[in-house]
Image 1 (cartoon, rainbow, N blue to C red):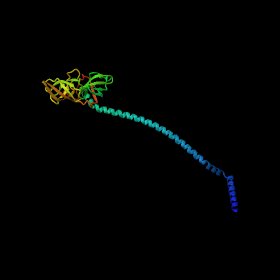
Image 2: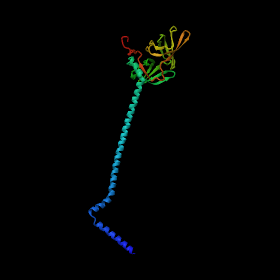
Image 3: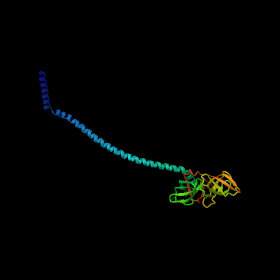
Image 4: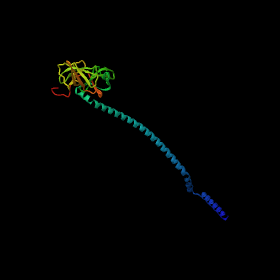
Length: 275
């Protein structure tokens, strides 16, 4: 009982002491006390302001990144386009270098290098090339590759033309053997590797391996272009059957040159008084 009374007296004393401290607090003490109460709110405000700033910055950064990504994608597309154009141009130069050299060598200024966009080797043999009347192509122009005859233009449209090949069964070319001078008519057989040289005079000498050239005696094909090589000679009574192997692989050919049938061939690589 005595202990309980003493404890109560202690609590009352402690309470009175606390009240007296509050009553007699100095200005600095009050500010210090309020500072403890305000601190959490200050921290909360700082956190909120920092969060808003960070969100605004991230939003602006995200938008900038989107704009940069769009710009880089556009640049990538432009570079891809330039790369494709460069590779296409390089492919064209690489695959037409020999033709360009041939045209420059023989000063064929009005010649057109044409891409072979379609090939047909069924009953009739022809190419579709990507040059037409808009490019100056005319019917009966001659298609050549290097010094070899490819065919002639049979149909012309504004954007493309049809070239009948010398392997076509309807193709006939006045021809001559380069070594022996034997003359005849080259005839396509519908075969990409073989043709025949017909109407050869039995008195003319023909030998295997001789090169068969266009003689220029016909109305269309100019003189001096390669047709093939004599691969076999058969005798049928009083006449020859001369088999000719073609010089060009038409299945893999990608380009050809189109020239007029009256083109003048001057070898510019030859110089001096004997030109």
